View 1 (tube, rainbow, N blue to C red):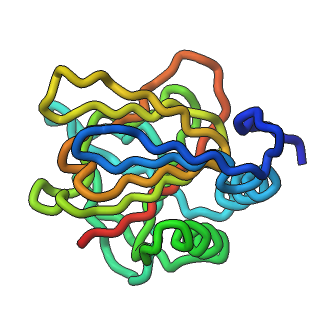
View 2 (tube, one colour):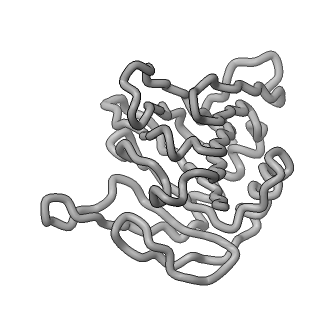
Amino acid sequence: MMNLFKQPNLFSTNEIIKTEFDLPGADVVLFENFFSIQESNRLYESLLKNTIWEQDQMIIYGKQVDLPRLTAWYGDRNELVAYAESESKMLPWNADLLFIKERIEQEVDIKFPRCLLNYYRDGKDSVDWHQDYEPDQRKNTVIGSVTFGETRSFQLKHATRTDLKRLDIPLAHGSFLIMQGATQDNWKHKIPKTKKQILPRINLTFRWID
């Protein structure tokens, strides 16, 4: 299989680079090359083919419009999940997701009960500024974000403090970003659009809430 997607140019593509970000009121850590190039290529192709992708919608100015990405929910229980002003069915874990889940759980010592997958088909697909969960649920959460495919900029800005600069983190093929503690309470995040001609990206956000 051709290496369509790039990982950071390190001496060894199997070397994991850990970066801890100094953000007030947040706990954010990036692991580059968390999955090897071979694992990342295999998982990208398999997830793209085997995930049951859905086109969710949201209401803007009274009009129902498509979300600028495809999504899918997987988890421990077969139930309906409220997301983007609609309900989606949560599907049972498959072999690929369990492989990824078990790998990241070894790093963070958390058992994730569910995962939201996002398929960004091109540079026009995006997600705007937001904080995950309802306000009364954000004090103690864990989100494990895994990327396969095209590198996209993951942006963070403080929810109230304008004196703090926005942070841009490139999330590359095989990377793992963990957001813990009160990160969702204090910081917003987004994946911006880009006019560049880019390849697709699959992002998996494994979720735990206290």
